[in-house]
Length: 137
Image 1 (tube, one colour):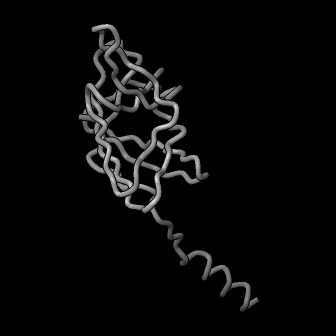
Image 2: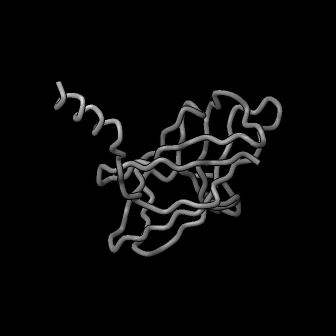
């Protein structure tokens, strides 16, 4: 019985430690305009490793579908385009900002309100995943 209690105590007091795959900072999204079903999120992703990392998907409960997008100029017209696999080069940073890379949030579960925050989960081709936090302005 004493061993069982010691084991339970050890489990309850042990914290899980994991290393982030990337560094994410300055995560933000604009407050939804009335009636908007979609949104976008931004921030800075840094790959601190010596190897390229590839984001293959993004998930979160804030929207039905979340994709990485960028803007491209085609025949003089600017349009958004999905990026199915975004490579983060070693020791480099990619800035997600309006007019460039962004997390497109399709089918928001509720309007984004200033002061709130939500989490997204980045999924990499190496099988790792990492949560990131976005603050609504």
